[in-house]
Image (cartoon, rainbow, N blue to C red; front, top):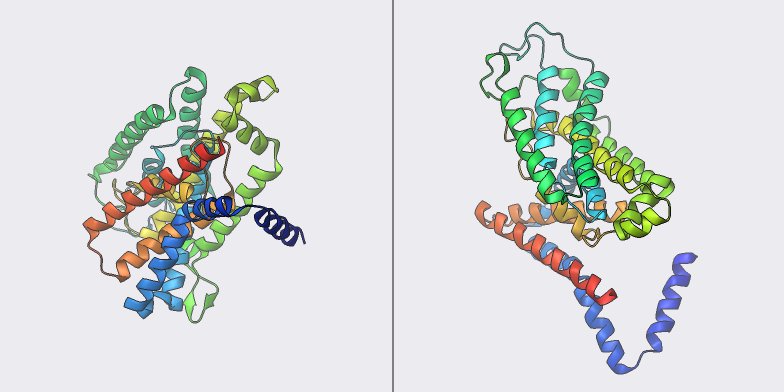
Length: 356
């Protein structure tokens, strides 16, 4: 009912505009929704070139790939709400993925990194990677809040530190940087196994884990004092501080929660990839940031929705899959990804300037 009333009020407001204002209205609407319009056109064109693009198998592939990216996206979204970013996200994913793989290698695997250790219980590994990710996030938040350093600089530094730790970790016990594979069947079944499918196509378990993460993050953002404080700090930290919000505590908590989400992404990626190296997680933060901006999380701060982040992840993944169906050269795919980020950020800034 509320949705219908909103539509009616918008229609009434539109009818009161004169011809010039209506022209401006449609111009702004087209610019604000340019990414979605281009996406629809791209999907239609891709389908005309390759009808397999919209098969159940293809759609299930898009859903699965999107689900794997959702935890890192909803984590980094909080940093963007605070007018920042997090360049360390991808390397944290790589580190936690390798830690997960090393602790959950099969006991009979010939080149097991820790041959004298048993296969760790999955809940214990989840707690470990959550802790590792949270520690990195805490460090990011602490330096941003305590010393008023720009998140770009702080997370660039921690990106390098985490990458160095990752390289050293993959050298332990004579592993010499070799891929961490031979994962235990229980781990693979827990993450990539399936108990239900659609049209004969199985739905991986990690899709449901991502659904749980989305529900949890939606609750945190919309139903807790922490979420309200996060948006208040993102909108105006000085005003938030005056109104009684602990800006430093909120900033640290946002980054810590983001780090925990990166850890969960690494846990999922470890089993999904099956063979983890020091390159795991490379540039994951770029796709996550692009998805957030496409989904309406603004770099000007204080604006964003979890639902928008999820939509942004799906839209970006649809574009990437479409490029593959069109057999676009891998090198050009990087160019297109960069253009998408540039266009999305430009549209976002234009919206801000218009509101201002």
